[in-house]
Image (cartoon, rainbow, N blue to C red; front, side, top):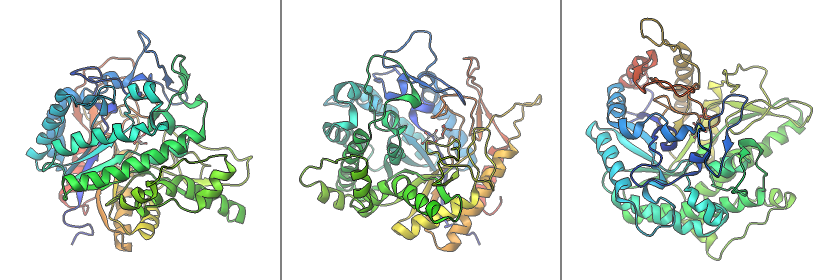
Length: 480
Ligand code: BG6
């Protein structure tokens, strides 16, 4: 008997800006990702508010999923996917973000994507906003800094909730909403950019926490109203939040380190989901706001909106863990947006992300204890370099090993009592990296023949992990 529930949602995840390409086709407008150049490990991407000729912009072509989605979804179906998590590019539906009528060509494209999934019995799981805020809104009102964004976002939600009614069941409002608890989320997640003329290195933008946290407040209100709207349009709709969750441990058992870790967990791992799952701001934030000179401006009725718009299920990305210490002389490590100090007991990936499968079990238990909501792991995986052998095979045993160990720990968590709905590993097909903007960091079961020097024909090749994952799915996680 399988440990996982019979209707467990096995699948994979992508985001429009990292896979579609066709960045200015069929009425699509410019998103904040479209103005970011490529980079690589150790070399930051650059934000160029004015596009530069002859510069490499990874989202402009990505992996051409816009044109090849039928071929890609067919491959997902061959692996046995039950769910496909993808995002709708907001700028395909509203090019600048502030139009009153949606773009029919954009809506039609996702009709086709959704129908293609349904043809194979694959449930679409749609992220409404995944690092794709219309740049038009950044220029107009500095995006989520402005309360006007709530209406623009709800207009977009209304257009897609009504159009895809009866075909889609699962929605996520904002990808990794808590990335805005760090400076890195300001542009990617929130569309905030204070200099609209000069290029800036991605990690060197001047940071204004007041803007980020006020922006988050507007996003919380927008998300809560979107949950309410979704339920009104179709009572069958289930709307989830989406967090970047990085398991975190005190570096030592010194009480100072334990307290530092608790504070990290509250601000990074729990603040946003406390609001979205419990429907109110946690009291611990008051001190944080006071000590950091942040004053959240709320409109009358916001508290009630938050209370009435809690999510139906909890989702998160999980790649790594880190440690916290009060000792400032200890150097931070690399990480998926959220840094921290390396754990001496763990090994890191080639990109410096510390691999910690047990941390996934720990995280699932912590989250479930806190919220008692059904949970889905909507991103997980190993970014690695893959080589094509002379015989054409791609033997990504390291990826299989990573995924196997994480699935084992998911099963342990289910035995511990967690209500786990599904699992969609990240970048089920190779795509462009969000943090570094490169092709070389691959996550997929499917290799895409495209390289950072602009060569490659976008052909799709099955890796060893493709066949492995197919068996995992058909045995409902028993054959690992
Ligand atoms: C998550 C994002 O942070 O991690 C994805 O939701 C991203 O968009 C993924 O691609 C992996 O990160 P990276 O930087 O390796 O692409």
